[in-house]
Amino acid sequence: METNILLESGTNELELLVFEVGDSIFGINIAKVVEIMIDSEVTPVPNAAPEVEGVFIPRDKLISVIDLHKVIHTEKRPEKNMFVICEFNKLTVAFRVGNVEGIQRISWSDISDPPAMASSGTEAGISTGVVKIGGKIIIVMDFEKIVSKLNLTSGFDDAGIENISLMTEKVGNKRLVVADDSAFLNEMVVKSLSKVGFKNIVSFSNGLDAWEYVSSFKNTEGKVTDNIACVISDIEMPKMDGHALTKRIKDDRVLRAIPVLLFSSLINEQMIAKCKAVGADGQFSKPQIKDLIELSIRLIAAE
View 1 (spheres, one colour):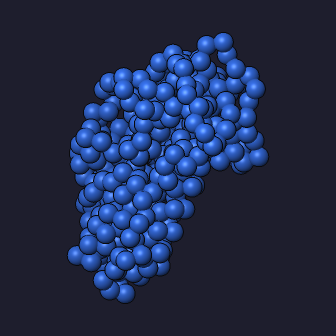
View 2 (cartoon, one colour):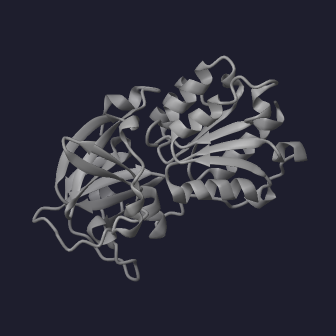
View 3 (cartoon, one colour):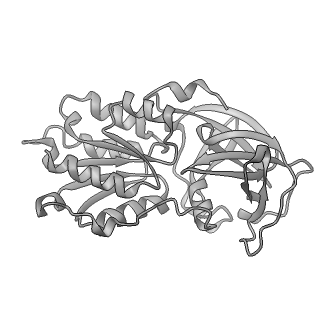
């Protein structure tokens, strides 16, 4: 699925594919969507989770199907179902949804954190934000967490990180900033960094809060990297995305010394070009946590 926004850098905008599941309206970043198609015959998989409907084989490629109606525990189903086929974290998966309403271009700043009351609802834990478009509330789903909980992918490959050396105690005491809107993945990044010996990690759920924190050190004495040694950021985030956050840091004559590593489920050739365009010091897909940590250590040690 082609869209010009994939070629733009640092605009803090995204295109959201909007669709229905039961009585709710959801959205997914179009950058993750490969194809939309009418539902097809699915072959059940023995011993799979109830939400995993099975597999189908369009054009000789085996794809797992997740029924989002079962994910959110709704009995309401439309007569016509659709498959939204997505690629992220080096995984291809189809989501069964109801009516697909279309694509909306919005700013990440329009997306708010999910309300606290959502933690007790059927969408508990699978929302990274909400946005109001045309009088409708659209829930931005945490698709990475959904597939991870269903064991289709871990989202992380942390094998071997226990063998990573911090090189010096000084590196381990440096302050790192982590930004990721998925509470699940945010926690995993922080735990992985702590596991190798980093002791001073500050995390945020969106790029704007991370930017306000980072920029607060702009006028402090000494090297700015003595206060913030590295920023590790997701790309998709409410309020300010990772590209816009990186661009702000790298456009600032003081803050640009801080290494910024982008860590996302969306890393592909087009996204790598966008990351480089905004000045990122590295970009990794979310299974590559070991590679990301090793580069962060090298960059911090070189300061």
